[in-house]
Length: 255
Ligand code: 0L1
Ligand code: MG
Image (tube, rainbow, N blue to C red; front, side, top):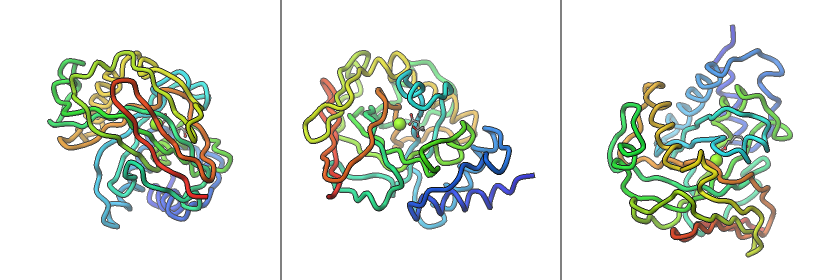
């Protein structure tokens, strides 16, 4: 019998203190379901400290990400207001274990989606779309984990940056996406790499969230998942995700 609350505290403390921990699965045999229970309990600790849930992130929604991490299942995590980094702001590497950035697209929901839905229904609930970046920061040593481990660790989610919101009607089917560090492209991809079309990530999010009993709420931000592999952050870099027709989102890493 594993102690969900105890493990949730370990994961939460690791995130708060930016201290790497061994994989949970090295000590306890945990299922993916138990991983989500740990994630939920760890996120509740954030809420108890006054944070508010503002959305969810979808993970492993592109082949490049699955290949990079050797995992081939979609996962999700929770986003809080405290995880939001304002577009253009600076972060400090000492607040993270070994952070990486990945270029994404974000959806802003104008309506709650409380059931599995079609792409057309999902799109009708979207108020706006934006270029975005997720900062992932596995709390596990050497960025190594099992599927259940990463799920327990909020699917590695650590921060997110959203650029200016654009029209929900923007055609997202095949937009060029460039992640650059100090103006030098480090990852190049297309929005089509996100499950063939980012809207599929939103329908997957609706299905998963409804099944979890936590429907997607009006006003939430849904991060659709990385279009490319993630790139390790380095001191002094300015990071930018430029998305064709949408503009860009970015942040700085202090020296
Ligand atoms: O695509 C994702 O956001 C998955 C994040 C979890 C795996 C990782 O840390 O790369
Ligand atoms: Mg991501």
